[in-house]
Image 1: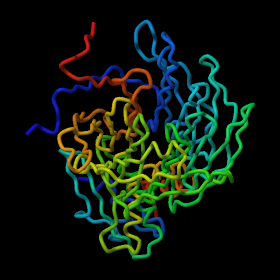
Image 2: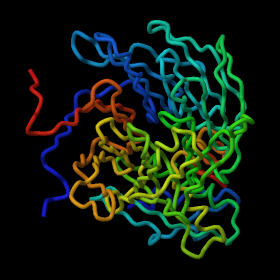
Image 3: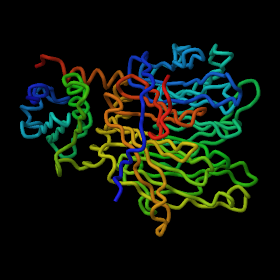
Image 4: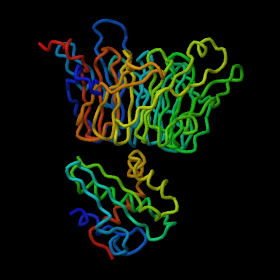
Length: 120
Length: 357
């Protein structure tokens, strides 16, 4: 079950997990094992959430580390949940931008903090 | 009705090149010197911050890594391009620089570093004569550099116009016009004013003129330069044409017009596209597949159309970032992937299958 991999990802701004904040739920994760495909749909807590791209980046990194490399992963915000939905989705799924972000030490620190096994 | 996938073609894997320790982003075959016995050379660049030079052994036909260009770029090396003479290799990096390497008989030294972009440089291209270099990047700008004697490079223009990061720049094969494509979904054509040495945007191809509806990742010209092909995150490939005779005559600008859209073939982002000298378009995509298209002779009523002639599923274990036809052998190509490998392929027509002795 994929939720176990990402349920404990911490929110970048709050001392709670994404599951506790209802940013991700069980039915937000679609897995097609046969096609090696995963789609995660998360719901930012507010529709102007400036951290949406960081949350998406954390989810992507966590899945990259958890899943076999054959999996293709799409990450998006829930339809209607964010003021800049299309822009956020586009950025989260542009792997060149993701690669560049993951070479940015500040962002990597932020992501690692959210992915640390224990927090609080 | 003939099946869209023609079974008369075969794609044979010739060799897998291993050595990079991260995803391979881009490939460049060294221009053919036109001298017999000079081995084929391929450059590759990677998220591991290195560039590798692979040379084909004349004895065995196998490619071997002859050089690793490292300790210069401090971040991902995103793109590489040989000068037309093959004497220089330009590499652009997320570290905001473009390095120029001189190839002295297989010994590479960094002879210039081009600085100016604010952050990630995503693509580099030499013009046909090797007198100009173009770069582009995340700062939304396109830079044109003049190649001066003694390995000096002078920025002659900084072109603003794209509203998002610029993914690729490519010079036309015969005329001094530059094409750029971007995360802003558009393709821009840049040309120099007759007298003033000023470069400016002469055409924008976007959704309003049959262009792409998402990030345009790459472009390639056909051999005669009267057509170009673009590929996108919108899962389509588009063919564009222009009046090349008029363009070459200098009698004003001949605009690019949409000719054809190839949709329904890809189901994930198309990262790379390359047009062979023999007219075969090859695509590399995030679905790990390589596809081949040619102009269809079947139906010319509505102008040229293009058909899929071959598809190789699982050409790599992961996304394919680059496909590149060889500059020397017509049926050879290379592909590069997130799986860290490069593959050398032979695309052949099955009935006239080459003998492997």
